[in-house]
Image (cartoon, rainbow over all chains, first blue to last red; front, top):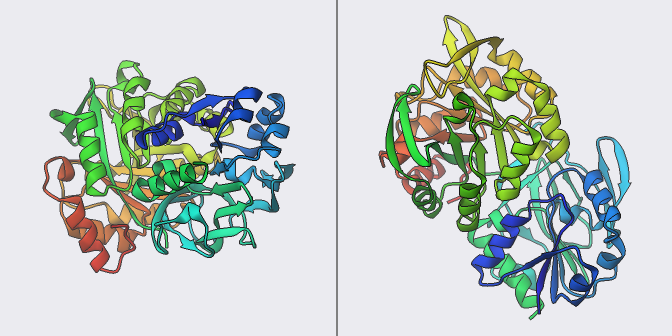
Length: 199
Length: 255
């Protein structure tokens, strides 16, 4: 069964693709409804601005096919943020995909520099196979200015000024605020765990 | 806790990694991918590839080698040099660069920063600043890749840094030229001066010569990362030893 990276037309897709290739899996990058529907698992990557990404998803009519996906679906960074109900960016509230309850807002970093950029520690809060082999205190690479607060759907937390959701999951839908494709061995372990979920 | 970053910088000229002293007299230090893999294996937190000839010769870095690096490397990397348009930045980000760094073209046309931030977001737009201390003034220079083409900009470093942050830059790399390549330590007073007003991540560049220099710049200037080239290329400092030593000093470091 194929691993499909959903082509939203705005993201840095190649580094995610390369990361799976290093694990011996060749993903398909596609925005084709049939290809996405038949996929064994789905990745929603994302870099850039949320309004632009949601506009692209709408323009490609990808919203309903993502929302009704039954396969394991992994959102990465902005792709994770898009899974929530609402997102705030540049003072405006936009609607997300609504697959996970909650709101994504500006990170309150207190007196720390923003964006939150660099390697920070993961703290698993609940058991989920995506985090197999990842210990509390392991580092992952983050780069973002917005985030989701902790909720009942938080699988792992991170702390920068305040705690926020680093890994989220509801049913078949999950997301990482960090970039597993750029998080060295820890990131590779998480991507491998994701592949195992759909095996 | 967010870890302080150790960032080897690979100056690239004609597809090879080179290093000069105070931006002059470049010597060949190796193959791009080979060095990138070595630093990845040694625990570098991030890599910067700086095409030092790009702005000067009006060429641009090649998305092909960016793609090659991206396919092999599982840590973030930034690409700099000659990126003077949204299209040029987009090509590099699509090829797999995590961030792009802009220096001379932003000085020539500051609106470029707004355009890049609008297209790709704050998080992947880094501004490099080459600063030279002249008496007690920090002056911004441009086109520093070639001493014959280097230009005065008429700008002061602290003013320019404030402007690039206002325009949405997500990170600043401050290269203190008086210190570059001479391995006498980072320019702590200058970095401290910028740190107090810099609300985005700040990376120190220029002057690393020994382990204590890294310790000093993290503890005294409060920077988020420290960039160095020759001490790593020439194996004067081994990254695993450096990181262990910093961690032993109580600095937040990812080993």
